[in-house]
Length: 245
Image (cartoon, rainbow, N blue to C red):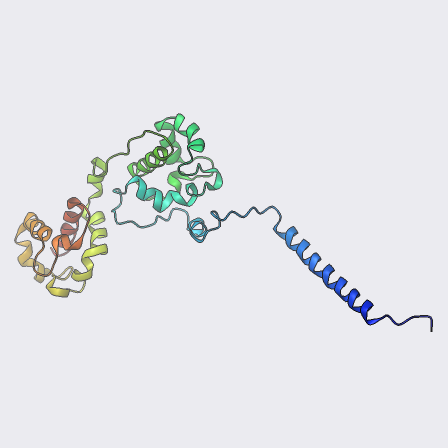
């Protein structure tokens, strides 16, 4: 016979060679498929990915009513999605080198860019519900963290007073705290919108009601357990009374 039978050792060697070639081929294909992707642990964290997947313009809720959020609250709820990791060319929070040329442009330019949008950043960072003062507070907060010396617009100023509208702020406070009892009438609380239950209380007048509610009454703790400002709490009381008139 012209063909010699291969020894078992040769067969094993050939099979091992084939396996190695297959493994190397798979590895090369994987490298080719993932080439160009520089994976950064910070950028790919669950929190960062979740923030980037959040719909544009969606604000993360905070305890503060609309218009009353501080710069830190706005940054943590909205701006961090890009400025936390320095995504899409956004200067990273606390990076003095990245912020220096921006801070040098001055307050008015920084605010203008934040309000109108700049490069990859949409107007107001995509959060249309932000008031102008809230956005300015966030700009000041981020700029100051990188060496700026800006002053945040005070919370509760002219814009803050306007934001304490019972139909807006009062409703939000009610939904976050008061409804736990007033929605169902639990623990003797007058039920929301129940005119008969609210009638003797309305007779005290708004100021009298606010004073009683602020101190606490019967089973209700002071301010119903609300930790916000007196102006916000008063708006909630007014929202409740308006619904029962």
